[in-house]
Each structure stands twice: as C-alpha cells, then as structure tokens.
Length: 236
Image: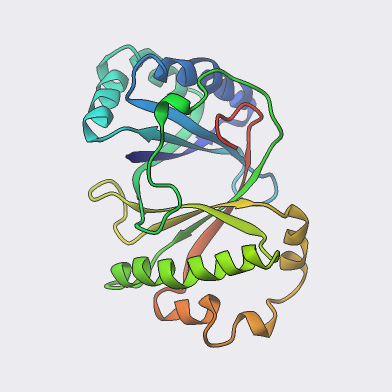
C-alpha cells in the first residue's frame, strides 16, 4: 500500500472552487477503479502556518496502480481536471509514503472508504515531519517504534493522552527526501493544546529516559502542522 501525500498552496480567492474540485470530482472519479481512494482532505488551521495550504492523502493499492493513476493524470481522463486544478493553486509538493513497521495503519480496505461526500464533525490532526541525522534514519525508525510508540500507548492507557498516533510513515525510495519520517496524529483532547502554547515544557517531560530527551541523539529538527479536516473528508 502506498500513500500519496500532497501539500497544495491554494490561491486564496479560489479555495472554495479548489475544495469542490476534490469533493465533487476527484473523490468520486477515483471510485471508478479499484486502484486508489482519497482518505483525507485537510486545511492548514488559520494562524498556525502558511495561509491557504491544503493537505490531501490518497491511498494507492500498489506501484502498478500508482502508474495507472499517473498516466490518467498525464494523458488520460484526469488530464483536463489536473490542468484546471493547477490554475487554482500556486504550487503543489507531493511525496509517496510507506508505513513504518510499527505504524498502526499498514493497509487500507479500499472498498470500505467512502466515495460520496457526507458531512460530519471536524477533527484536528497534528502532522509531525521529522528529519533524523545523516546516517540515523534506520535507528530512528527502530527506536521510535520502541520508545515513542510505547510512551504514547502508556499515556493513552493512563488517560493522559492528547494525541492518538494513527499512522507513521517514511518517504518511499526515489520520491522525496530520503531522511524523512511523518507522524500522523489525531488530536483527541483539543483543550489540552492550550497549556502547550502557554507554558514551557515541564522538566519531567525532558528528563533522561523520556522520548523528548533521548530522541535528541537521533534528531533535533522537525516541523509540526495543525490540520483540520473538511466536513466531507472520507476519513476524519
């Protein structure tokens, strides 16, 4: 299973038209074959980063399905749609992701993914993009699965969790920057975000043995995005 992750820099005055093109065309058109399904359509929450950025994640069955989808975009039935979409955004950055061994999400039953818009409550996600040190990628993959995933599970069991780690990915070979990890985390207690913004991180969360401390051996740079699902996003 492959996951196409795209960051769209949408033209502000055309954001409603851009969203409609994905909701009313991309979503149902993918349903015409068994190759791919749109999973997420999310807006970058206002006040937390670049304006009018949209993140989409599309699940693709395998490499052959990706090639067929690419040909549809380049020269097939989706070519005119793709050209029109390009006129609604400044740019787009894409990468192919594959799940880490410890990711809760490994595969998708494409037949179960909704292919018609349906309104529902909105959800917030925190997407952390991590860049391990040169030569430390594989160590980060292994130790994050043992250490970070364990800490998050313990917090969940203890009723302290702010986030739920729904998936973890690495970039597929040849598709993007090699030393990159993406953590896909649903915010299950939005009210708990406020203390993170108003106060310094407590010392007990940075002591040796915690992931915040020990992971500094593997990386010290990452980027967090706060994303909000559209009401019709198939997954929320």
